[in-house]
Amino acid sequence: MTVQPDIQDLMRRTRHYEFADGLRDLQLALMFGLSGAGIWLAFSPIWMAFLGALMLRYGRWAAWAGLLWVFLPALAVFGMLGVMKVLRSRWLWAQTGTVRPSRWAVS
Image 1 (tube, rainbow, N blue to C red):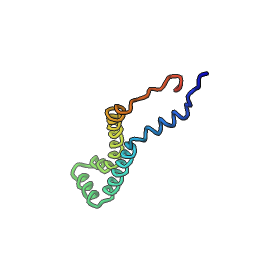
Image 2 (cartoon, rainbow, N blue to C red):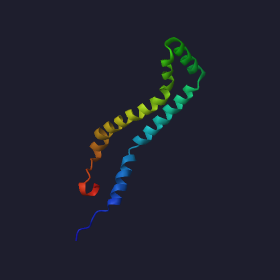
Image 3 (cartoon, helix red, strand yellow):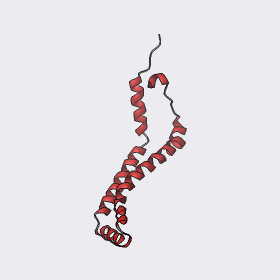
Image 4 (tube, rainbow, N blue to C red):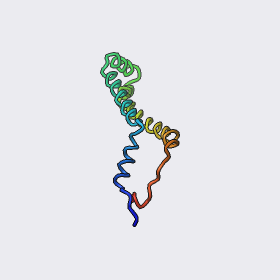
């Protein structure tokens, strides 16, 4: 008699493996750090004066530089996803191996 594997347990262990290396924690810390620095910068009087000078010199389009703090954390997250993929493929998966799911277990 053939014993079927516990699919739910395999899925749980696979999800746990995703967070075992700590790269997601570093990504979240980077996002929080950049967001905090951006909010601090956005409300800083020096930044407001700098944006005012930019707007006087280059016109209204220079005000888009004020939204830099909004886009920078999002770009950092996407960049970190690429870095995490490279780190996992070269270091983590090279040491522990990868598991490709069977089609019958996924579908």
